[in-house]
Each structure stands twice: as structure tokens, then as C-alpha cells.
Length: 138
Image (cartoon, rainbow, N blue to C red; front, top):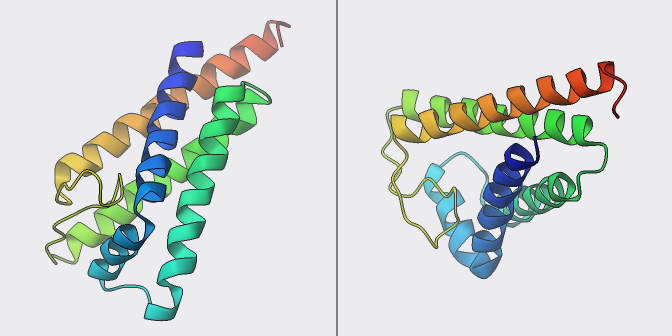
């Protein structure tokens, strides 16, 4: 259980850290998606990064782990849906922005698969948290 929460925390904190390292670059990545109005690019960039920092830190802390895992599930499910939506639009995205502008990778079906794996990790963590609570261990 600890390994799963740390995997999720490291992914989220790493993604947020990479975005923080070059926020203007992440804003340009968001602009390339062609979905957000220009006035919303910075607020979206700050919001996404803030949520990743918060949820990653929450998972790392281990406090209210079930709720943290459920929140991570919502976040990774949203990322999965976003990637699917963008791929179905058939507009090439040269940098998915998963790690800001620090790790340039195109948005591909592999990106979706990675997010599905993270969703699966969240589901397993939720199951383990619920089982532990039902066993009376927390």
C-alpha cells in the first residue's frame, strides 16, 4: 500500500515540479492544445500545477489516504479523458505537457495507456484502503 501511494505521489510531485521549473514553457504547451482562451492559460497552468502539488503531497503524507487516493483517481481519470479527447480531435500535439516543457513527449495512445495504469494504481490503492478500514486497522 505504501509503495502504491509513493508511486502516485512521486509521479504527481515530479510532474508539478517540472511544470514549476518552467511555468512559461508549460503555458506554451497549454496554448498548443488550442482549447483554452489566451486569458485562461496562466490560471489553468497554475491550477493544474497546484492540484498536482496538493494531491502529491497529500498522498505522500499518508493522511486520510482513502480520500487522497480517490482524489488522485479523479485527477488521473480526468487526464485520461483529456488525452482521449485530444487524440480523437486528430490534432497533433508535439508535447503532451505531462511534465511541462522539461520532458518533451508527443501526445500519443501510449500517453493514454500510462494514464490508465495510474488510474489502475489508484483503484488498487482505494481497494486496499477500504479493505484495511473494514479489517479495523485504520
